[in-house]
Length: 205
Image (tube, rainbow, N blue to C red; front, side, top):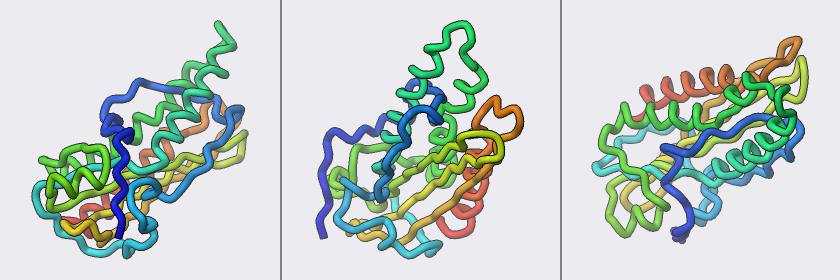
């Protein structure tokens, strides 16, 4: 087993600046496994919906795809704002990925009030955290009316030996209306977070 130390990984996303839409025009991210750059095992190695009892303290690590979502939205923000006075501000607000990050972290904080954000799993091992959780998410935006935006969350729990012991997957989708003023990312996010909360409450303690 290899735990990958990545000091550049940020335990930041509890407070990143807002970013925006335009992702229909921006290049879609090439997503990777949630544990890429963190562990030699893939996220799929963790048993789905398995019971997990956390030991204190609990570390929170962000997965490999969150920064890809942020990069997509930063690029999209530039595209949308290039329209100047015609900028679709509703779209900009809807497409802020911080919204789903904050909601998902809130679910974990409610379950584990003392959870602590750290850079990577190697740091969790070095600091002898009893448990660790990797939280990741992806966004696939609908391109036009009738298409779907899908937000997917994944959380992978590790024991003190850095073995993945449980994986929770939750997703939400929303169909773009006519006219498609927004990509309905917040709507899809709300559905995904509700499903995530239900799984955390059911399987993790």
